[in-house]
Image 1 (spheres, rainbow, N blue to C red):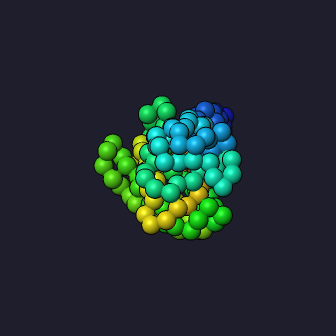
Image 2 (image 1 turned 45 degrees about the vertical axis):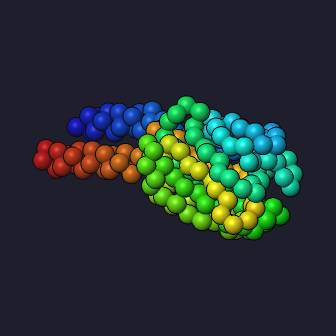
Image 3 (image 1 turned 180 degrees about the horizontal axis):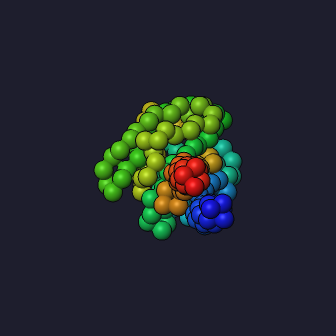
Length: 173
């Protein structure tokens, strides 16, 4: 009986190990040039109002809206962004979309430092950054691929259930 339980738990461990790891990306704007569209780490930005100021490796906006989508067209989670105080303290509006429908929006001050997005920005396929009142600079947009995020809690529950079934059978024997 113990051999069977060991085999079942081993199989559950193999399934858990085979689950794909979450793929994360960071857009650092390292090679952004003035007023261009930009792609980095699989994320594509469409804009004509984003430029690299106050220095290379960051994105600055004085006006307009920038649209971000995965180059693959897939779904992702928007995780965080650094708002750089040196580039202005105006408000930026980050708006999330799922298949064209707006699902979330948040206004972030340009001098806010690091900002972590809520779960409202999970499983989206587009987000937009817009200037509300004054200029701001942002950097290090972090995102993860929503299609490959494993569910560790579910895997753990399956493992616990298998152990429980094995224990119940062992008690009967």
